[in-house]
Image 1 (tube, rainbow, N blue to C red):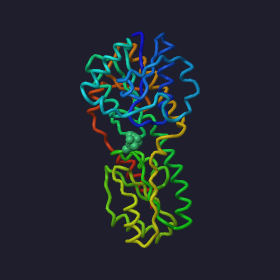
Image 2: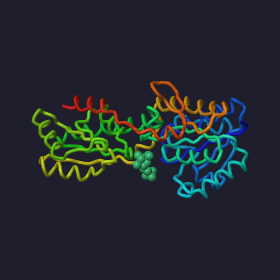
Image 3: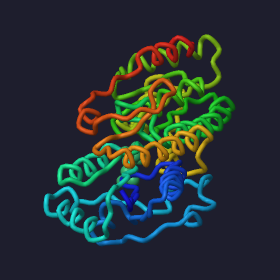
Image 4: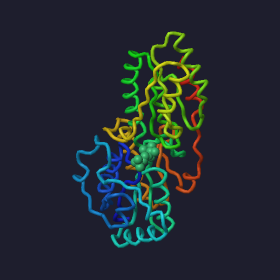
Length: 319
Ligand code: F6P
């Protein structure tokens, strides 16, 4: 192993830069040449590849986004696109590839590994929807961004004695809603893993009001969606004012938290170590505080389980 490359793909996540920095500096520290691939698999196909040095990753550990840019490539989903990618990697003499991204990016890396490319994946997505790891890079920052918004919405919800419905990202995974909802003391958390009953929701709001609650915070995961419709229905049934806020891409940006920077640094370091150990088709992650690695096929086959216990805690504490 003499030359490795790194790319970021799919939705960006705070902490991706810290992971790039870790890969580049670990590689250089161990005597490798390190190349950066711009715009994910789309840039790979177009040969957007450049050499990186220690200074290329200076001053980025605290920045959100990704200095390598990112993309979702339709062409790379095809066999022809993947073969192009393999040819480019071979033409540049790249012996090992680090892919930083979510589930879709891992499928891209997995496809390359089937053509003999040595690759290691690092989980970078705000969604926390990758089952083999306890946490993905960017999740902690996104939860804290949502928490900040919830704190602010609580103020105005209390002043006006209104219901505030906050829609958060997470695709089909309710983790951002669950964690931010618990941390923010939300009255109700609506996630795709559990669903909801609008009548029960309205009853809970009215009961809360009778017990003297001045505000009512409802967190809805995007996998359920419909924050505006939920707000209208609540107003209609309870007669209490309701406002919806869809946080959107705000959740994808911002300076990564210490947890995300540390996780990214540990995972980036381990990814390069694995390539140097001759391993391929592996993904790195964290389990009970320890850095682990898994076979990519097995990792992608694991079904995510929802944290029922955490959901029950949030429910019990919300009255
Ligand atoms: O996967 C990260 C994510 O932010 C999801 O939570 C969301 O569904 C999606 O990406 C949005 O994608 P786009 O960047 O294409 O709007």
